Length: 58
Image (cartoon, rainbow, N blue to C red):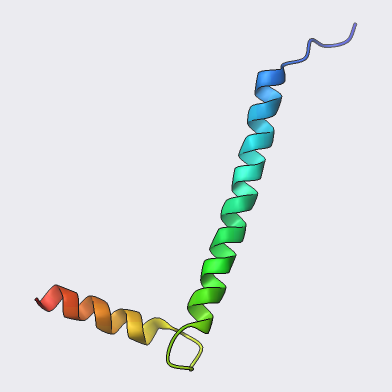
């Protein structure tokens, strides 16, 4: 006897996998953007650190 389909669960699983894949792509894109942005040394951390330090001192 074949199993009864659970369409709602299957759709939720597909959506969850799709969301995880999309989040991974966005994270990779943000890392590439951060690595490419900056003073040319490739880290991109120097400009962000100086901004956060200025904001905290005010």
